[in-house]
Length: 129
Image 1 (cartoon, rainbow, N blue to C red):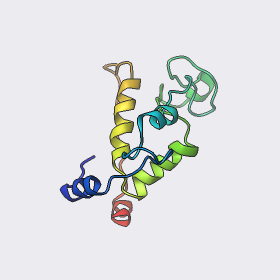
Image 2 (cartoon, rainbow, N blue to C red; image 1 turned 45 degrees about the horizontal axis):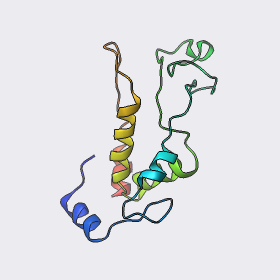
Image 3 (cartoon, rainbow, N blue to C red; image 1 turned 90 degrees about the horizontal axis):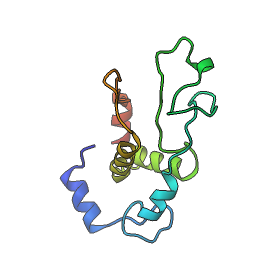
Image 4 (cartoon, rainbow, N blue to C red; image 1 turned 120 degrees about the vertical axis):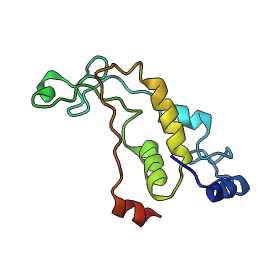
């Protein structure tokens, strides 16, 4: 995600406090980041059944070509607030933190994998600007 020079200057002149503990001069301190983005057990993202290696369980896999899904945590509480702030309040430093953590989480990307971004609709981008 590209941060404009103006946004960089604003964030330098007016640093944010941590979203969770309100102590650090960053949007998300290391301690809170470790709590929010802790890796959850390997589960089927559809039915939440325990699986191995982030696979989708056999009963949910029928009819779908999707085989595995990795995530940083459950979409609730502080993680949900981070995502909403990133999307709607222009708190873009969360995107960098989430991207780096997700990169650490992925053990490898097999050659037969397809990585697809989830683009935002143009109308939503204009609405958020």
